[in-house]
Structures are given as structure tokens and as C-alpha cells.
Amino acid sequence: MPIDNIVILTGAGISAESGIRTFRAADGLWEDHRVEDVATPEAFERDPVLVQRFYNERRAHLLNGIEPNDAHVALAEFETQHTNNGGRFTLVTQNIDDLHKRAGSSNLLPMHGELLKIRCSATHKLFPCREPIEVDRPCPCCQVPGQLRPHVVWFGEMPLYMDEIERDLSQCDLFVSIGTSGNVYPAAGFFQLASAVGARTVELNLEPSANANQFDEGYYGPATEIVPEFLSQL
Ligand code: APR
Image (cartoon, rainbow, N blue to C red):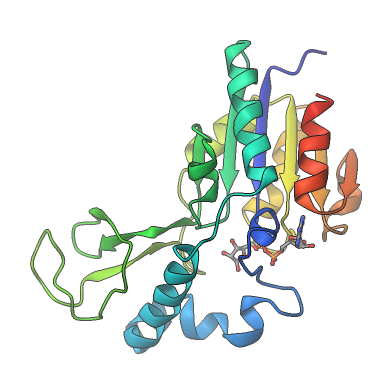
């Protein structure tokens, strides 16, 4: 069966070799910070200084020499080739870094938000952000201090682009999950939506994820090796 409609899901593992920490490894981000303290709306309400500092640090790290790696580039190049041949390609990422965008991916859905954007809590307007944000900085739209928050989906909040994601999954022939532990829903359930419409489901990861045995196929190793290899055989 020709592979016309492809949906890719990526997680922190695809950016690990670029120098960005994952969340649940032994040296993961959640080893140093409790989710409840830095990645929930309640945390932001309780201690906005701590939350803004957490994202300011991650933003500064991303902007300090971090580059897309061969896996990001291979996905962008494959998307161009596949769409030039009339195929459909959607890249859904759980990552908030901008490495897929910088690698050249175009049909990109950052379902957990973007680290290099901030949002006014009153108007929901987005603004580019490449520097540290102080808690009391007035938002450019209302000029009111304290309304700017990271444009990041926190635990307990609805992920972004879910209508497009579910539409594309319902029409896909191939679903590939790359560099995610399969711990966080709804992303961890996307393979089931693809499988339900008869798509081929593949996991590319450093090691088998929580749902590994429910994929049709699994290939394991560093993303910079297995992603270009897998795409070259499609
Ligand atoms: N190549 C491929 N996979 C890798 C590599 C690598 N070099 N390094 C790590 N991995 C894999 C790990 O084996 C793990 O399965 O990447 C996965 C990372 O898992 P997590 O740290 O749980 O990150 P992720 O799955 O993206 O987390 C999902 O949880 O905390 C929230 O919002 C946050 O988007 C995040 C979501």
C-alpha cells in the first residue's frame, strides 16, 4: 500500500543529542524540579518568580549554541521530498524547543507550546521571546504587569492543535513515534488512533517505551542514527 499520509510524533529524545535534557531519564529535568512546582497553572499562581526562572533558564540554554541534529534535519528533508511527491506529512512535537523549525520542518504542530514565545493571560496574544522575562513586565498588548506567561502547555491544561492532530491521525497510513517515553497523554495515545484506521505504527527510540509492544515495529538506538536510517528506507 503506498504511504501517502504520514504523521510523526516527537518527544524530548529527538533533541537529547543536541544537548537538551529529557524529562524522565536519570539526569532528567524532573529530577531537579517537581512538576507541581514549575509546570502547572497552580505553580504559576503560587510562585510566578520560580516558574518564570525555570523557563528563563531553559530559554537561555536553548539560545546558547544549541543546534538541530541529524534527526531533525532528516525529518525536514524527508518532509520536503514526500510533499513534493504529493504526499501529506504532519510533524507533531511535544517539545517546546525550536529545533524542528530551525531544521526546516514546515507542517509542524508544537502541541505543548513554544519556549521562544510568551502569552498575555488576558488577551492570549503571543509575542516572540528571546530574553529572560521578569514577573512584573507589562504585556505589550494591555501594558499590565504580571499578565505575561510562558506559551507552554502546563500539566492540567489542554494541548494545542488537537483538532488538526486528530484529523491527520484519522487519515494517516503511517504513524512514527520518535524519542518519547509514552508517559503523557494525549500524545501517548496517538498510536492507538492511527492503528484504529489501519495505519502502520512504528516506534523509534533509545529504548522501548511504555507502549513499545503495541506498535507494529520498533527500532532502537540514538535518534541521529535510527531516524535518518528509517526514513531512507521509506
Ligand atoms: N535518541 C532517541 N531517543 C532518546 C534519546 C536519543 N538520543 N535519548 C533519550 N531518548 C528517549 C528516552 O528513552 C525516552 O523514552 O526519549 C524519551 C524521553 O522521554 P521523556 O523524558 O519522558 O520525554 P517526553 O516523552 O518527551 O515527555 C513528554 O512530558 O514532562 C512532559 O511536557 C513534557 O513534552 C513532555 C512530555
